[in-house]
Image 1 (cartoon, helix red, strand yellow):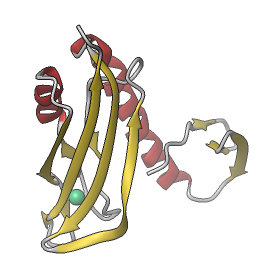
Image 2 (cartoon, helix red, strand yellow):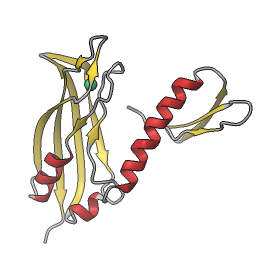
Image 3 (cartoon, helix red, strand yellow):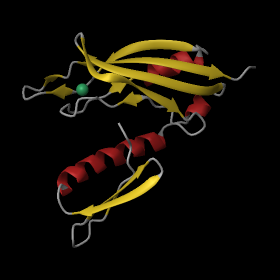
Image 4 (tube, protein in one colour):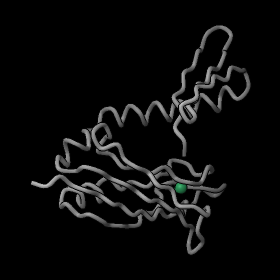
Length: 162
Ligand SMILES: [Zn+2]
């Protein structure tokens, strides 16, 4: 999922300013519709950023870690969601020591796949390649039942030699 830096002006005009950085190009969209939806998304993003900023840095938690690459895919039951795997290259010097992968289902509420504990444990042990699965913690559908989406992740890490 792409990350957009967002700014919101809540002035008298209730104008929404969304600045998205796509491939280094800066685009500003200014408009009135979807104020509420955008506002909720921005609240979620602000909250996530606040948690990430408050978290310890990955470079402090795993000082020997040099590079980290994550391959993510999602499935529901035995059915794979989406046809591609996502590759996420973690910027080790600045990344927070926090790994919560958002749920891939847009209808999921309070979802996410928390893999921080498993990730840090493996990275601290200096494992070069590991993988795992983590179910979503959220609920989906009108019944509010469990989301049922499962994240499968594969991590490839390199470390400084001691
Ligand atoms: Zn979910």
